[in-house]
Image 1 (cartoon, rainbow, N blue to C red):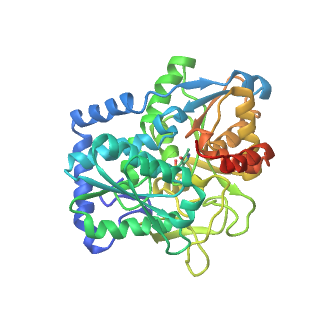
Image 2 (cartoon, protein in one colour; image 1 turned 30 degrees about the vertical axis):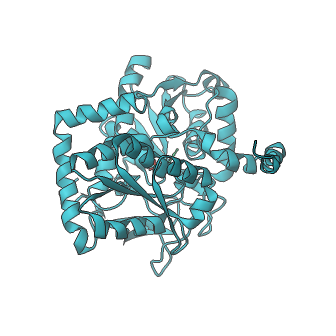
Image 3 (spheres, protein in one colour; image 1 turned 60 degrees about the vertical axis):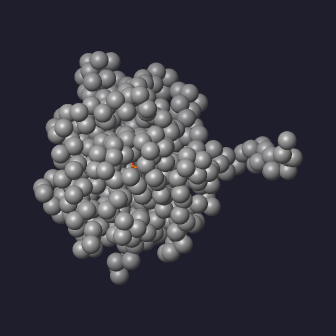
Length: 408
Ligand SMILES: *Cc1c(COP(=O)(O)O)cnc(C)c1O
């Protein structure tokens, strides 16, 4: 990355004039913090004692035997506190906010996972926390809203536009424009203006660093291929970037949804509906129509339906250093069931995209080769969506009878 935060033609900082000073302050504070060994050790210590790192690298003996191809390993980000890799980033940025002397953080959230992670870390670090969330997402993801409130965060419903993630992001930027003196904007993925893509990818790189050590210790070499699902791109950046100079092939899996038509998927690479654009403070590949209006998206997983993608990944894909494939909603449910039934690991629907991509290709590889699949989060949060997709009648009956029960 250069000083303007460009990655090839992507990235940069396209923000209102009023945010320029705080953006420059953040850039400087981040660079200084990362060259201060005490800060780096503090981040490491919080990741260990609050989130439970290092997370294991788990061998899948049953699926490896069944498919008869590459040795299959899982990087278990689902075992982080709060159940996803989001924790790595909020710990880093939360500690950075404190170091900058900012007592308040704001965050945008789509499905609510980043909102909950921000609320958790704010409670621990004594920060005041406000989360912007689309009104439509609040309806769909109420359990996460419930936890944010229990943790003492303020949840602000956003009713503009489609009332989803990109609208929440715009609203958070608006807040920051008038509050930057005492407020840090805690972005949840490796998108947005510089230095966010670099910073979030930096805090997430602990994933790939651990995979390097663990693969050497457990099977004596680096994996031949690494798979990660790609929403905004933070778990993918985290597991890929430490391997950029190695032989491992890096494979991103985006949301193929229910079809190729506009609005039915969230593919930014395997489609001709996405191209270069500037929105939400940065340049990247956005799904857009001929007039440049951002398109609606769909995915069975709430965390993979962002309309843009990390400028780091857009650039790496263009350079041929990352390969992008996709998995449809149907393939994702099959992959979810395979991992659950054969390995006893319940992946998030987002992570099940990476599982779908990995299992599809592992079968074609040789037993001398090995792959690592990033399990970005656990599936417990998806119980309602999974029950619906599997048309599990007993679960729906349970929900109905639970509501009728008297409060004791
Ligand atoms: C938020 C989320 C994602 C998508 O975010 P990235 O920035 O693309 O990693 C993927 N998996 C889980 C479990 C999530 O919570």
